Length: 448
Image 1 (cartoon, rainbow, N blue to C red):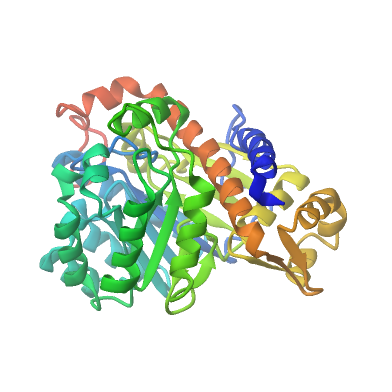
Image 2 (image 1 turned 180 degrees about the horizontal axis):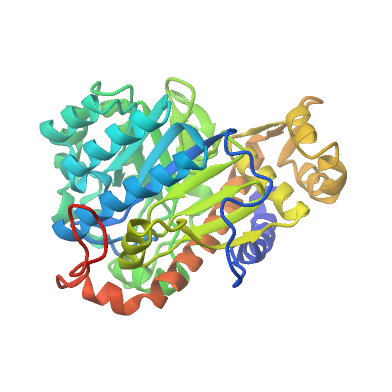
């Protein structure tokens, strides 16, 4: 039933509208942490490091060009923010460090990770990087820092696609990337390779070659295969930049390519989420959150605590000053309605392929299935989920539908990021110079 494309298209439109509502913040004063929260309940921690030496045109995350002075001040601000959360009583056992390029300043990252490990009982640390950062010095630093998972942004091994994405000159061609990944294999517990599908200009042969390299030659511990997701403001330029030789975009094969990915990788990997494939079980994904609450630290990061969504400032200057002067990190928040919170849980938990019915009913005092009765019946009617009595499980047909749901939810987040970055456009232009932190003491991080 899902194959004709009608149902995914309808679901996509509904998910897009819901994402816009959820990712809309109130304009009033922010009370953070939100009322009723129990800080001692374990939460998951995300740290955002927005600096990159090369800005990729398709990247939807908050990122700016690397400058040594502003990066040093930023790492100091992060330590202030994490100390603030510790003082509030928060506990974290899992950490995901994303960007940007977190390893752009190895010494700063090592000092930060040492500080976080001293303050919180971390069991898992996942760090993102790019192929050029896979040097012996960086890998040794990650080992010393207790990093358990390294996620490398590759996107494709196809030199033509890499050129179209603006990555060939920055990170090398497919052969060089493979060499870098082979150097990193076995150094940490898990090596994850981030890939993209449904890229303009990508064809079946290119995708098949990438899959053979991943599963056959590299035998990566984990592969995360994301559909192309860009903010609406960048969508047209990406497709023009990466169109085929005739000038026509070859995008639009998302469902077909996803099926090919699942067919090839599930022969050797288990599915940890709808787009994360793992050899060793226990998939770790930036978007798969085990805990009910998570905290996003750093400029342009998001949090979800006790039914409240929240965001830090996207102004890096503002973030550094705010943390130096002892302020709370969050600048905007919104309490989700009961139905919005339930739908959020349904989306995120089933992104990980299963939802424990006893757990979710206990969380919502027995109201979950009753409140979302129409949603659940609709998903079962199109064979997207099944009810085993103890769990809701995503079916084989349902995995692609969940790709659509997550893609549209994250596109809503991308649109919000684009809006927030537009509000600091003058600061972003300054980042091309050296004017970001002229009035910040880089040793203390405090305003002068």
